[in-house]
Every structure is written in C-alpha cells, then in structure tokens.
Amino acid sequence: MVQRAAQAACRVGGEVVGALSRPGLVVLLGVAHTDTPAMAGELARKVWGLRILRGERSASDVGAPLLVISQFTLYGDARKGRRPTWAAAAPGEVAEPVYEAFCVALEVAGAEVSRGVFGADMAVSLVNDGPVTVLLER
Image (cartoon, rainbow, N blue to C red):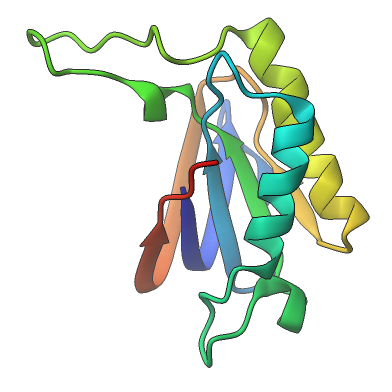
C-alpha cells in the first residue's frame, strides 16, 4: 500500500527510527509466501515511478523521499469469525529478505529511503496529503 504523505515518522520504543525528510510516500509493504526479492525489485521500480504526486508526478520525478514499513497485517483475513488469521503473510525468514530487496532496489534507483525496523512493534504516524492511498499488487 502506498500513501502520499505530507509528513510521517516511525517510532520503536518511543525513538524515531525512520521519517520523511519532506513530503513523500509511505509504503506499507506486506509480503506473501510466494513473493521473491526479484518481485520486490519490480514493485520498487513501480512505486518509484508511480504518478500519484501533485501534478501527476512521481517520486522519481521530484526526488520525493519514501518511508518503507514492513506490514504483515496487510494479509490479515477476517472473513471467518472475529479473530483475523495471518496465514497468507510470509514468515519473517521469507519476508525480511524481500523487504530488504525492496528498499535496496529503491535506493539503487536513486530514492531517499527511510525504514522502519523489520519485525518490531512500531508506532507509525503520518499526515496524508490528499489523501491518496493506492493498493499495489504484483
């Protein structure tokens, strides 16, 4: 999920571990069992070129920063009962290399990337710009 944000920050234990230096994009990255680092690279290039900023511009057009947060709960399934299941989300040993590949692909493309802490209990705050939120799936 990609959100256009005026400001955003990620805290772990009350300390800021990642933040946007100026308006940009917040990426909540969920990883499924079948996702691969190669797929993450393709998705990173898509996000970097996605024309969702004002004036139909992309982060790559204006050098907008990105804050990337690992978010396994995007794969929560609550269709049955009252307790969601996370079975569709990849376990950490699968998801973390995909998350890292996504961030590295953005950096290689020239993006300024801030990160959350994979697997940590994070407090994420953001002020939407628009609001604009786009769900991307490969």
